[in-house]
Length: 142
Image (cartoon, rainbow, N blue to C red):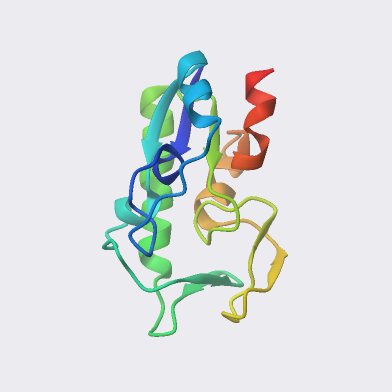
């Protein structure tokens, strides 16, 4: 199966702080499935590193301003790649304003989590692509 995956989970240094969040099960996932790494924030035109962002309602903001347009553009690009390459699922970085699924930071920059999805996760799910957080990789390895 082809799976879209947050590039940071594969060790790519594309997170807002210039780091990665390599997941120990990503290697096994790559052995069993064809992975398509993406960073929606970079696809949307944001640099690395970049200011931290959080989702506040329908907007994505940093302490310096609104970056919603870049997050939406990145989500559209990720969806386009899913369609073009025939991805059947996505594994995305949890809690991210782009990739988070189920719980994301609430926009107050206090480390508080709230129910919700990141922009990319929301768009992929709306188009019928199952979205998993990295803590759910095991489901794809069963």
